[in-house]
Amino acid sequence: MLLLIAAPRGWGAMRVAQERYVSVMNWIEHVRASRLIGHLLTERDAAQEVRIHGVGAFLLAKYRGMAESAEGEQKRLADGKALTELVAAALSGLAMAGTYGVMLWLILSGHMGLAVAGTAVIAVRAGSASLGALVMNVNQLHEESLYVQDHDRFLAEAARRAIPAGGRPLPERVDRVVLDQVTYRYPDRDEAALDGVSVELPMGSVTAVVGENGSGKSTLMKVLAGLLLPQSGTVRWGGADLAGLDRSQVFDRVSLLTQDFQRWPVTAALNIRIGRPAREAGPTELQPSVEYAGAAPVVAKLPHGLRSLLARMFRGASELSGGEWQKIGLARTHWRTETCAADSVLIVDEPTSALDPEAEIAAFDAIRRLAGPHRAVVLVTHRMSGVRHADTIYVLAGGRLAEHGSHDTLMAARGRYAAMFETQAAQYAAGPRAGVPHPSAPPVPEPS
Image (cartoon, helix red, strand yellow):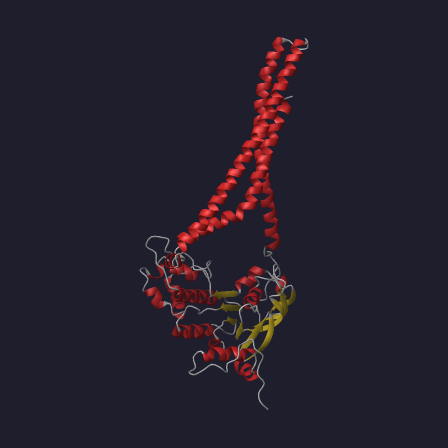
């Protein structure tokens, strides 16, 4: 009879917990979206368009609608919880009445003495309360176990996707890095981002990779850096296959400078030193990198030089423009490359997008000078003027290697590279642009 009293409470608590869990799972993206809208309304980067384009009222209306939907869901849960608990309490009350009814029958039929019945009443009340507390604790454990199962599943998925630790040591001497017939397809795409691409990067060389948006340049750089393993084909550092190497050693030989490199909310000095954070360095040790990147004027105008905090969310901190940040990024790259004694690869992806023309030319010259006997430089850019001096230029189109060679060779071939180069060159030429082909257009044959 005590179990009959406790069972409806257990059912009700279990049902409420499951309803709440299902609601959280179904509405979690909704909650994230509402938080994102709230962030967009208050963040500094979006402030200009929020004010000038009048986006504030639009976003507030969206936020209000989402808040009303969330309140409606909470009301639905509260109503369902109240109804479930009412039914459970009614059933539990009926079981309690039935228990007392059985006790009364036992007393009247002479099967139970009055003193025993009084003790039984006290036992029923105490036992019912104890079972009720047990049911609530078991229910809380059940509800938390639903999220623990999700957590375990996430950990298993993270372990499956994690870069494995350990592996064969990277050869000390690497004369070249070779990508041989590399193919990679993202899980959510039907078409391959890279399809049978072969690239060779000798140490001491400057290699350029060009192509239209979506041609596979960024994916190629991730494969080269060891962030992604090809699904077919091989990546060899020296004669060693990347798939079996200790990936941490590969990362130690790679330097990366991208268009959207991280702007850390720390001091200017640490923003440079973070290129190799384990190595201690003061302003004197960092100065050559600052000079190399042309960042000395940027540092000079900061209130505390390299010790200035670059994070406007803190009181007294400073902020840099996009071009100034790119000079800090180049200084960080120089610091990382110069502190690597072994053969290494420097990957530079659209490094000059925020620089003025004069600074852009200086930046490309500085990047090319980073190539040396023990370092290969890979330059990915849409600025065709910056790649003409590369030793080898690879042209990607639709995830495939369209052509490769030196600037002069590719211009003479009158193919995709020549069309891209002439399209950009025409922007600076006087007169009409009628004769300039689109980069994706087939080459026009020379008249015989």
